[in-house]
Image (cartoon, rainbow, N blue to C red; front, side, top):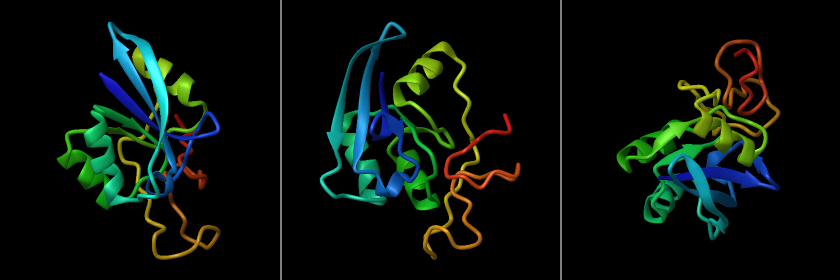
Length: 138
């Protein structure tokens, strides 16, 4: 199994469509056997799903993600675990242990305005948190 995580300085990058790097983890027998950080070559949004498909990713862990990218990932057969924040390595370990908390209804709908304006709901799912990818109500 190959797990991809949006990556920036060891942390889960909170906007899938703008991530500049992914950390890819190769998993065998329930354990990480190798990992590598790969660049996106300036690609964004929909093209990133194709990049992950070519890389052989089975699962994506990320913060916020828009509907179009979600559909592209589904079409590529990549399972989405969104609304996650914190350390990439810790998230993968939690996934392998069966304890990763994620938001199955994650949405990122701020593509029509700049960050910081009202209505920003990247990764927010109605529990009072307005931080990208935050899922602190679990």
